[in-house]
Amino acid sequence: MALILLVEDDRIITAALSRALTDAGHVVRPVGRAADALKIVTEERPDLVILDLGLPDIDGTDALRMIRSVSDVPVIVATARRAESDIITLLSAGADDYVTKPFSGGHILARIAAVLRRARTAPEPIQQQIVVGDLVIHPRQRRAELHGQPLQLTRREFDVLAYLAERVGQVISRRELMNEVWNQARIGEEQTIDVHISWLRRKLGETAAQPRFLHTVRGVGVMMVDPR
Image (cartoon, rainbow, N blue to C red; front, side):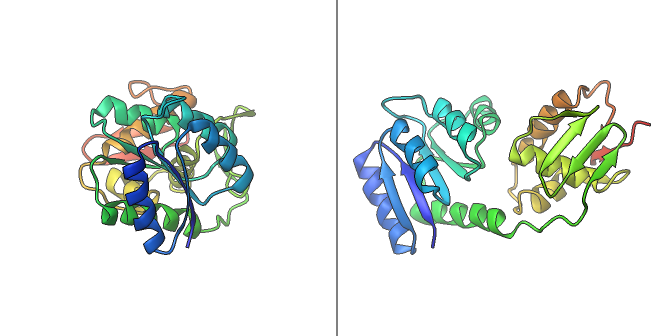
């Protein structure tokens, strides 16, 4: 059972989703405005948020960024937008997963189960710190520093960076990252990996053309390299 914050202003959709979630054993807190959602996120600490983008008070993507500024709660975005650029924007804003409308109750329940499973069963890191050149990662504190300066990483960016840093010199496929970091294999979703690698490169001060830490092995995957 989980406390799920459902942010949706369509009453018909809210009623149907609330019924499906309740029947599955979850507790549902439905709201129709982003402002109300932010209050519940900070005060009630839900286990998961389902966020519609078409809200009456604040654009859903902006609401997602606001939620991310105050909480690390898993967020599944429900959207009618299917363009790759829109999906990249949502992932960049901090979404953990997304579903495109229309979707069935079974579909959203499966996504919820997968996201909650990842959030609750992530293995406890055993290393105190990982050092790769001037990059220092503190797994237990979920912090990373480059040249002594803290890196501002999203939860997923940190997970990808730590996974690669623990395997310096190994070529890691996108499928392995999807399986081990996202804990799922979604055919055709490997572009998500490319997006996160691109963001990490930017924050590490490198590019695909001039890599220091993250080297692409064409047709295989990506490898973390100690630049020293």
